[in-house]
Amino acid sequence: MTEAEIGMLVRTYGLMIIAPLAVLEGPVVSVVSGYLGKLGLLAMPQTFAVLVLGDLLGDVVLYAIGRRGRARVALPWLARFGVTRRRLARVLRAFRAKGGRILILGKLTHSAGFAVLLAAGMARMPFARFLGLSVLATLPKVAVLLGLGWVFGAVADRVGHWLMVGGLVVIGGCLALLAAHLIRRARREA
Image 1: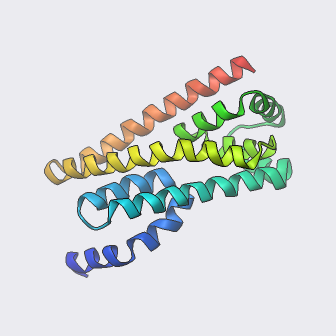
Image 2: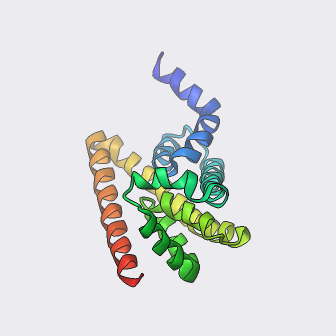
């Protein structure tokens, strides 16, 4: 397949491919989509809308698992991240007290997002409030990640893909450190 044929496939079917991927892994797909937008393969307004809807759908699925399945379904998954029943009980208490703040921080740091979205359901956060706060956190997050993809796309054209990979590693490391700091702070407050 030639580069022109691949470009035509991405232009034609790109959003249909991006949509399910955005539900599963929104941040990485957002950055890649920004790069593809820079190359002119994706229209940015439509891509932004698809990424936001995909991210929100993923949030709602995790919220529903937490709300319906509660500990029975969620605990085995959370155990992989070191979340015990005792820690979960503390998180749920904190979530009931400061749910909005925790939800937005979890969404923006992404590394804690999975557990926070499940906790929102388990804590029985009202769905309308959950969705509203999730939208408030998702819109700027997707915009920033698309922008990063666009900027790194411009840089990659000149410098090479190694710089983009290095930049993503640095950003991922910074987000992981921020998430670890926020988790430690939340544990101290609980």
